[in-house]
Image (cartoon, rainbow, N blue to C red; front, side, top):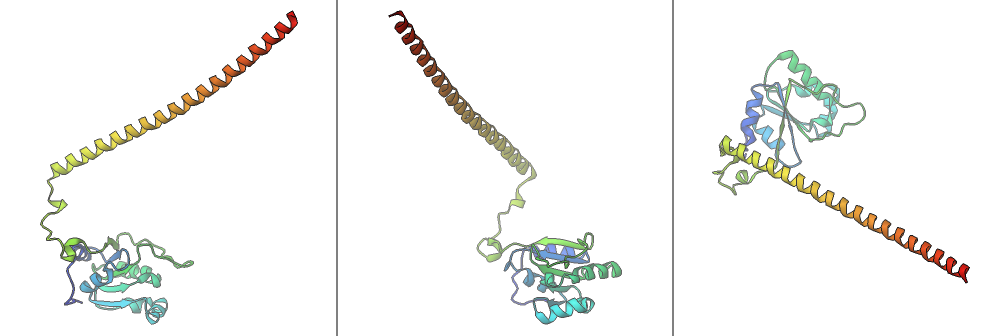
Length: 215
């Protein structure tokens, strides 16, 4: 369902490619990052499970809710977890790509035994969305990208950071050893001081006894 006011996102191409391979695509991400809007732009039909009426219907007749022109957008699907297993079963039955787009929380809050019985491996592809980038907001012109860096430079940067990390770990261990050494020296010096004072007291005590005995 193409939206005239839709601003194209970087993930649009990825979503389109996944719909050509998998029976369903699960879009996860933080709230208000554009999951529903992006999915709706490529969906053939849609249903919103956050509606109490749709949620009740999904729990009673999940096949009916999943019926519609593909790709069928099921928004906030975790409100009726039974839809997940039903969609997986229909994907196995029809063997068609691009049947469903599920959107919802990155960490669904399932109640009781409502958690789906199957992770959807091989049927659903998982795609994570994030908030608009500077380029998508129109602030950046997008002429410079990390993907433009040559592989050799990327390898050099990885080697640089790997060496830097090793140095940091070495200096951290050295610092920790220095602290341990200082504590050990202080403890040893304190022990020696206590022992010295004790010996001095004993020497004075025996000397006084000797002098008194002589007199």
